[in-house]
Amino acid sequence: MGAGTELSATHALLAFLFAYACSLLVLYRADPRFSLNYKKAPSFQHLLLTSTIGTFVLLGLLVVFNAFFGNDLVTVFGFGRMSMGRDDVLWGFVSGAGLVPLLLSEDICVSAFRRNVLRRSESRREMELKKIMFGSMPSSQKGVFTLVSITSVKAAFFEELIFRGYLLSNLLLLFSPSVSITVQALLFFVAHLYQGIYNAVLPFTLGTILGLVFYVTGSLTAVMIGHFVADMILLSMQAIVVRKGGLPIASPGA
Image (tube, rainbow, N blue to C red):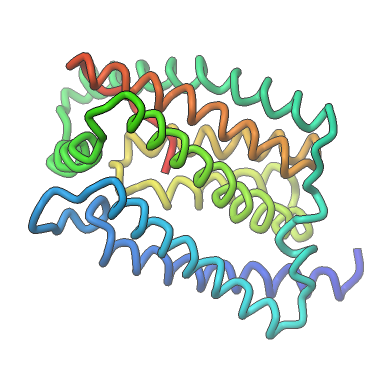
């Protein structure tokens, strides 16, 4: 790897850290799930809009800074790693389906640890967040399916493009695979800390597994499909449980 490649990757990572901080600041000021500040219960459309604004702030700053540094945007965002080959699709579905039992088991273990070892109940933030999230759910089954589908597509495409396609690709140019995968999973964890530190453990696991899949396959398509499949299954299960009046299942989705 040449010095020019290392310099481009370094510029890309510096741009990411600045853009990431700006997008989180926007979300903590504008998104009720982050700020817990709202006059009336926000609708799903409002939550989707504020989340999309935060994502576009991050992407927009990344584009501007990388263009300033002279980096090729197709390369730096990993678009060259997107294809729809049979192996890409297969890896995506297998990893997504495999994540479901893993994350459900982890959620059960974390809940048991909190309840039986730490003797801690839900925090105020967690209770308020559930009120916001489940209060925004449509009453009709069709509306719920639409919500789950939109959320899953958005999270799968944009989060994988940003954290695996952009961040992990550039980290791998500078650091070892183990360090790179861990760092991008930690930053993915930070983005979900508004859910509470214990609930954000699931996104950390999701980021780690998808980071491994991305490293092994070199396919951005595979991790997008994997993320979509996992989110669709888990969010659908969560919606069914909530509609029946049960306890919500934790989800790694945004």
